[in-house]
Image (tube, rainbow, N blue to C red; front, side, top):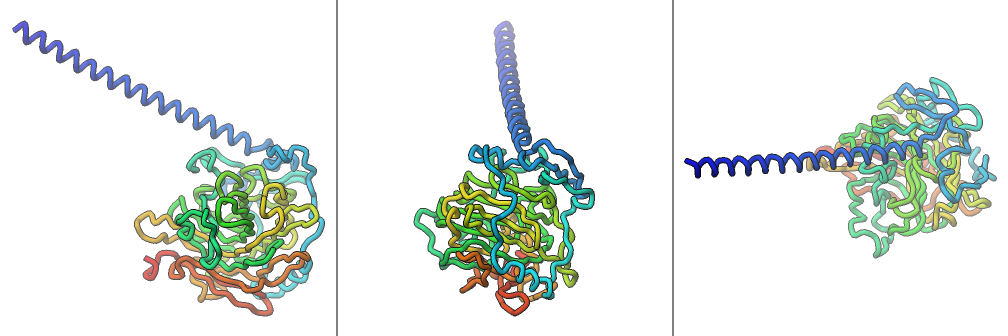
Length: 428
């Protein structure tokens, strides 16, 4: 009996040791998790402090955004070490020639630019000498894969038409675009100093929150390897970036193919804003309706060849600001390719093509009032003239999912319809 008692006691001690060991490991694991969460929260708060500058005034937008009116000299751009003593250029030295004739033509055309505004305007405007900045929330940063990647596109987010030479150093899956799909028109083979287009604005449906749908202009320099320079502007719906499905004005830039440099809007140092009326990343309202009113935005990006900066204008009068020349390598001189069109992320979450819409979600052949379009497409040449592009090409990875069709007439100049529904019987 004594032997049995000793054996039972030893067994009980062993079980207790295992229990205590398990508890210790659980406590260690729990402590590690708490430490990780605390560290992440500190990183997020530090990032928010850097992004959200002290405002002169704050405007609450009906969509839940807070728009901070920040003094022009305190904007995020001036966190950049190269911009510490930068003298803000308050206006471009000149606009491209032919711009205002083009605006007159736009007003007379059937796709006239209906009155649009940003949603926050209904509750006030920012005072002079300030710029409106959409306040970044903690949830915005937490939705990103990491604090470092917040506000950045994924690598390889630029369409590469199949007849364009791709350097051997580029990734072997560059044609695949890592789930990004496009329907674009493009020009290449010359030196370009800017681009312009008028595009109608929609609110495409997004299937997965990690997908987006956008329509934009790409100003590109360099090869499609690791050194690609890109300036981009347009409208987008991106639940991951903004936390909702609103259509928003955006810009983007990179000087190393979306790796370390650049960001959306004012989410890093780079773009210098001078305009007090338009907020990057803020909602655009109203949007176009199917067989209903069509709402346009015009975007012009051009190089000030005297100072070297790349300027952006929104609509017919809002000069928003500029990207300083030093941010870029190839674009410090000129662009070698211009692209206009749509892009979506196709994550194939359920093993099928995404049903995320591009543009209006309708195919190009449905035409005005139903399909999305770019019209009055132009490029800026070396003499600073706005010109219709020569040898306009088109590209789409899967025309059964999203397509593009070009045309030209006296009202719209060079134009194209583009877009599609994504998943459908011909795009499973």
